[in-house]
Amino acid sequence: MPVDPVVELRGAVCVTGGFPTLAGVDLAVTAGEVCFVSGDNGAGKTSLLRLLAGLTPLASGAGTVLGVDLSTDRRTLRPMVGLLGHGTGMYDELSVLENLRFFASASRLPLDGLDAALDLVALPARVRVLPMVSLSAGQRRRAALAGLVLRRPRLWLLDEPHTGIDGSGRLLVDRLITGAAAAGATVVFASHETERAAAIATRQVEMAGGTVSGPQ
Amino acid sequence: MTGHPVTRALADAGVVLAKDLRLEWRTRTALTQVGPFVLAVLVLFGFALDADRPTLERATSGLFWVIVLFAAMLLIGRSSTIERDPGVSDALRLSGLSPAGIFLGKVAALACQLLVVEIVVGLGAVVLYNITFVGWSVILVTSLAATVAISAVGALYGPIAGGARTREALLAVLVLPTLAPVLLGVTRAWEIAAGRGVGDAWAWAAMLGVSATIYLAVGTAVWGPLLSEL
Image 1: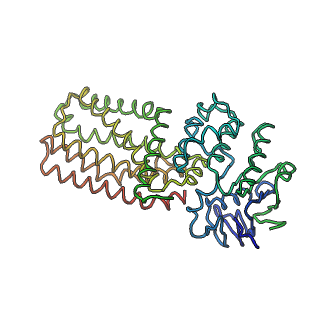
Image 2: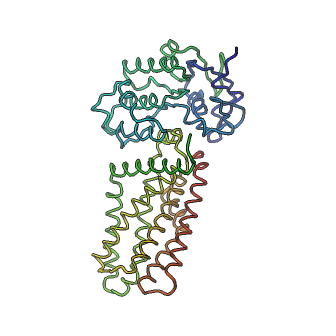
Image 3: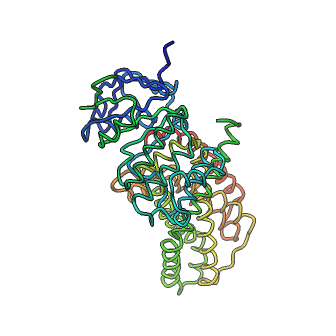
């Protein structure tokens, strides 16, 4: 029995500042897949992830993510996905806990899962009450990952998740990705660490010039 | 998403309000930037007009609200930069907060900070100018309406101007003409309440209330599409 794709893009084009960041992407990702998106800088990996998160509009083409039509209703999609971008997505002047409380309240999530999420990413208790701006790059990355874990999204979108963290952090990212997939989520992630990413992915697609080559 | 849209928007507004006020408390931007500015302007106006007490008394309501407006520009600029980091902006859009709730929360946070500024300016006028405020019911009602109007316009125009290279100038160009009627209404109402003008102060209060309602309604309606484009 065919499985409905979680992500289905047909000829997806996105334009930013007059420039086509995605130039006709065809891609289908089914539930539970861990899809590794590789490609050089400027290939369109980040643009693809932002499109799948509902943050950028489709200029042309068609696309559905988690059953939501990207052409008509991106706002409905956003709370269902989790995006780990290049930044932390958190307020620098607030502590880790304050940030997580805010975003948990905003997403109507129970607050009793905060400590568990922070334990999972191995962020020490003394660090959790410090402002984000005081944290190291690796600690900030772990805090951002805790935010993602707390959200329990159905679709995980990770943009170079291994960047900026140490060896144990990279193992943590790998565990989180495989754990999310095992729990039924779908993961699409971009990375320059080809060998590491290929080891945990169930599928790999290559991007170049705003399009996807390879298995779509 | 569950619950009535209005209930949800108000709940979301509460979450955003608490976050913005916590950020302000953490950074003390209003205290360190707006406070000295307000006090400096109060003192300078006092020096400039002190020799002419009748002029100072007549000009107090106008001076008060001009100072509040300029202080509001600083606060609006600060409020619009809170989510300027692209990652934070994306996180806010992904959070599921209703656009109306975000807008109303921003308005409420600005209004709270402006009310503190107004209290400081009022105390400063009393201490430095030896002014006595009369017509407290008119003052309170019109101040509240004007504060809401200024906050709504600021919350709407702040992010629009925030993306421009000349954002401070653009903000002034957008906000000040829009708020000119508010400035006129509240100063006239105060002058009438103090016995220095003719007319019905409550008519001006009603105009301010209508203005504040319109600005809130417009901001609530356009914030969603605006957030998507920012």
